[in-house]
Image 1 (cartoon, rainbow, N blue to C red):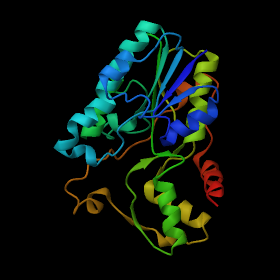
Image 2: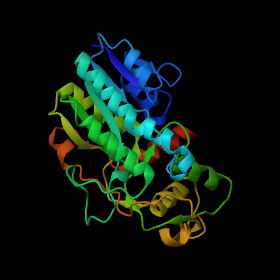
Image 3: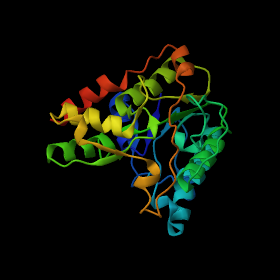
Length: 281
């Protein structure tokens, strides 16, 4: 079986390379999925699985009209081009999406079939990409949240601030769960290995939902600082002087019952956080 990892140098792409060591890993220099001609002309014959971890992820920068074409090319049009390619070669498409396709107003965890209602340019581009992925019969659409892996991310930033004696102010009314890339990659592997029914699956770490401030406090405690060193504020106040920032969904919690029914049990995010921080040492 030939597996391709697209976006191989990103946080998830690196975890996928470890999870699928025999896969062909392609970064943007080897296949720029935002270039429809490059996708069209790639040799797809013999490809069995396409793991698409390539995306525009700079949420705030996506709001700049100057970036709109690039955002759409990476997050929506690219998925359409990949969908056409895999339909031709018969491969399975695994496409990774985001809870930003929702407005965050749902009470309780979002099920997979909750209607998309994005608040931001980034969210709309991901929602449109989801639609393209759904046109492929053999597809897994993976919705995830708050990704933490090898590279720049919130947890690594908070650990750096804690180590340098800085006390940040963090929003406490956006609620979700961190997703550590080894767990995300393992869940994707599980769906493929067990030949779970195709379709959309929420995939995050498990455990009690928390705010960004709660996650920051847990990081600070793990680094020997007091949780009280993390000041708390609302999203409205935090972004009051940031008019160019993208709107965020306040509820980012995803319902995990569907993937759990396939036999995959995600780790609780707190032990996963402990392991991640230990690896930063």
